[in-house]
Length: 378
Image (tube, rainbow, N blue to C red):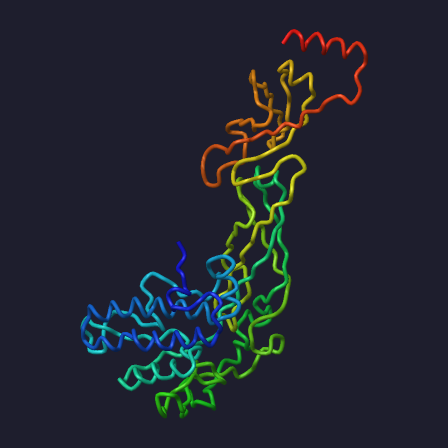
């Protein structure tokens, strides 16, 4: 079950960005792990809470991510990763003394948090802990809609997709510079990868180190920038990919194709492609989950005589249906195992038939006599 980020921050779903920011600042100050001191147990408890608060804020403070979360209950890019990662990049491991303890590895982007991020960054840098600087931006994820027929959803299909996005520059292979010319020391930061500046925050005045805007924290700059991509390592192009859509896929389901999104800056990680399935309406069948529903015309005589009827199956064959004696035509007739395939499973859903009883508009005298005799008989 997805987390309720609004509940975590204690705000209403219609909360404004300022209300979300204010709630985050308050909770982040209250639960920040540095308040645990040397208490390892308390540190872990505060860290888990702080990580949850940070995750909620990173989603709700971003307009695009918030829209994705409100619509799908999750986001497709930029969400904090699990598996032992700590908020703002804290990692538990070997301390600076070399023994077991708590080390701090700032891998998150504290700049997104404004003055509060500056405060936390300087707090730990004041303890002698240096922040490894960022390199370049990961490529954005790409989302597209693929429309398929009900037959394709039933049988499975391979689709060839084409879409315009940013790919790695052909000339420099995504590096952003001429590799033969190499790199030199950044003149702005003198190779340190960071510059020092003073900031005034609501906690007071702080002197802090920031990522160098010219070399992006690398300490080096290219001697010759790629003329094709102007140093970004990216170029606009048409990307093509084949995607296999397996039997049983349904409307709104999303297929992830790793590494087929937008290329990252200067050789950074490429984003992912998310393909959202849209199912076309069908002239004979209506789908609900793995069950199918269909309305079949039935002649008056077929209903009386209990004749077998044939209906088309999505597999391409025909299904023989024998109406049970005394069947109530106001109810649906269930045909087990003739619905849609179960996704990632065995078997199929059910088919439900509704009947539209067709009565003759005109009766001959002979037909009337037969029906009158039948009425007396039954």
